[in-house]
Image (cartoon, rainbow, N blue to C red; front, side):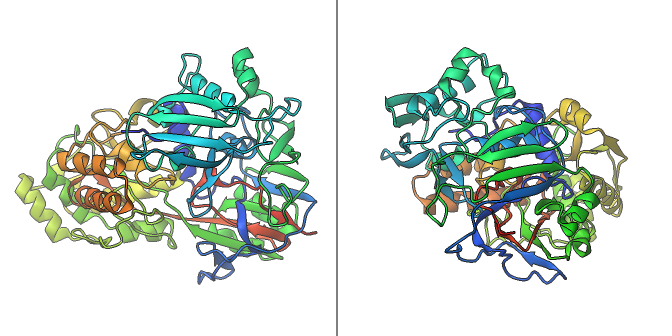
Length: 553
């Protein structure tokens, strides 16, 4: 089975995933393929528009100028293979992958202008665009040799992270300067899309740099992306100029980006960022909170978009008595997800207890979110299952944990504790630092906690990571033979109907039997001045990029 994209060491990627869950964090303003100043349909909130349904792309957009972004944090490294949230966002502007995804998570060409697969989807041949060049390499063009060199580096002992995005790759062969063939260990119809997975590190870098000294990537921009680093102060502002003759064009037929320069202004406080947008100190912010809407009404628009962020309660089956299916069902019946949603993200959405979210193609629309367990507490059914499990008098459970990396987790933990106490399930809750959670608690035996996952490009990615018996992040240590068999059918299917049917079965099994308890999916918020064109939010943080934004001022 081919693997999904988790291309950093565990701590780095988990920190990224945790950071992604914070509604108050801002990263890059997402701009791609919408009308100038578009915001989509009105959401029903005063001053907030929905970015879920996009307008048709504009026929013409202004060129030139400086685009200024209000960002929550600086970056620690320029390397596309390392770092946390901001570093990944920067990597998306400086570097390219073979493929990319748009705001609807549909796969798009990037360095590979086209590709073809063999009959059983175990081999893909990618044809590279001609004329794509690396920064700071005297106009050196991207070739198939650079693709192979990047793969070789990510799978070598010299790379200290994880290259699970390409662990399903058997070989990478250079056919000619602009053609590369990638052979897989198993069928994977989603492989072109999988290469652009959230947090993935399969950015193409120059073979010469990797052969000479890969640490150069930490200080110098060697990407082929639309923006070239001009100045970098680690905790302050970052500035970029546009790449010459970038290989992707805008609606005007000229190479992207539309603007001439980009300024990344570090404004750590959310109110400070909102005020900067209101007074025109910055042109756009993303990943802000809805309660700042009144602060950005001065010639600015606040937009929101549905996300696939997840905050599951992990019922670790190595924690007594969570290995008992009736205890797990009792917890699901006692849970009031609507109360959690209202407390944290009133405009968000509920999903299934399944790991696949409503923003994904293979989400099971016919499975009601309240199937079996409802969306509010059913204490009678909860107590009935506790009786069946032999705990009619209640349960004294070990401490439940949450970390401080995502403010929402504290609210979830407090509500979870109170809701469970209503049916006699008692436990203390304990706050951890994010670092302690990641290094000592995440994915270990004998602990249970509230987790979080960023929006993945592929809906099957989280189940593959966390719900399969042999998933590398199977935090709950849950195992179900029927689930594993259905999931294997899904990821090796060569037609969408078979894949969809198998993933629907997976979602039903995990929703009703699994140890993954879904809570809610928060909405994302961003804002832009009225003179900014093509502003859009992506449903996942690290896919936001600015190369298609335009400014007219």
